[in-house]
Image 1 (cartoon, rainbow, N blue to C red):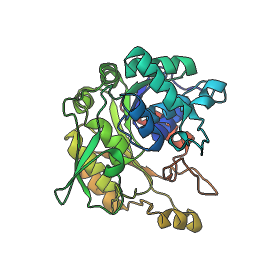
Image 2: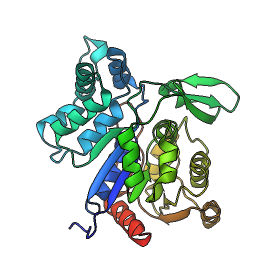
Image 3: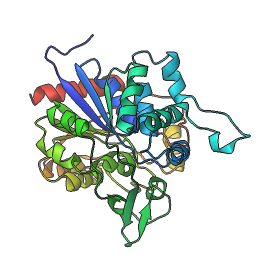
Image 4: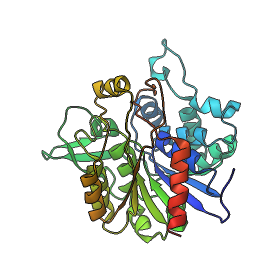
Length: 339
């Protein structure tokens, strides 16, 4: 049952899979939904599409559009996520059709943001989907040893020193103005879950994003990942995630952090994740007190979706997902409590 007696609005910021799940969780409780999606991916299918057409990364946008389709089983929604099996043409093997569609629309219109809007109309999305920027730029990082890496694949690469800071190859790249307006006007803004540096924080390095988050009167919430991520947050605690975000946004911007604290998860499943470098985040009370000291309210409980087997995502690692019903209820309760 829909439970939005007032016209609540929510904006989710991050990558394709995490942002899509936040919006699906929020749908029964919020009358207006929007996504602000990362555009600096350089993965296999996305990287080929970016080389084909001078445009930002379409992969996370494509995934969000598909997740937000009113009829996810409709032909066009399924086509967006369909991947070519083309061993005789290796360049296209694994290519997502939706990436090619966005490339064609971008070349036809000369405007990536307009291409995303047109694709959203084709799919008939239940949420507005904005690219964080229409600028074609690369995500870069300075590592703690002072070395620099360029491109999302290098930023999330394994066996490198930790990431000290993020920046863009084009320091003038500005965030998309309608996305900034949506953030300023939202009742709630949700950051994450998703790849912490290459999706969540990657959106915040575009000019205007941090300012919009500081200016919004809505509640700003961070949904922390359930596990660490190899190449990005190795050795991180939940506190480290929150602290890093507070440092980037400035004090008094982040209101709350939704943090999973699961008990009794299947040991075999956790072992499978750990073998790939994904270690469960399990904050104790002392860690939660340290988060409170940052000026952030921790919303800690068991939010994990029960699953019997390890899931697979194309060319990326998956992790323990948040239960949609519990996540949606938590979002709704928090925004009402702070209204």
